[in-house]
Length: 122
Image (cartoon, rainbow, N blue to C red; front, top):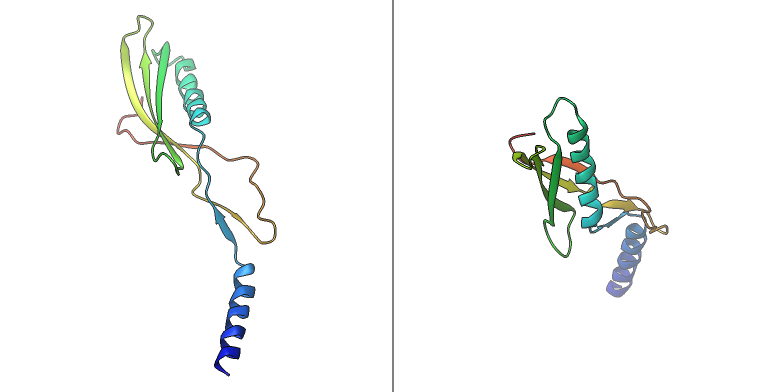
């Protein structure tokens, strides 16, 4: 009698968990994150209200191996290459994407988000 109850419980749990959404993690592509940071910096350099003429970016994966964050430092320079400002940003992916059984599908396009981590925005 006990074995039958255990088997029924296992089958019931199996059916229950087959309908529960699954979570999938994605590692962020550092090169794409750097491109996102560069797009952001280009907008600031193009702003006529700012004295920036050039910029450089320095981006690193925050948690190598399994990460969702890339930390970038953006340095802004004037025409004589004198540094005017430095700001830090994080480019990140949403933590997880959800998929339901049986479509465990692949996420075709990931949204790269951006947030400031420095106290000073240039």
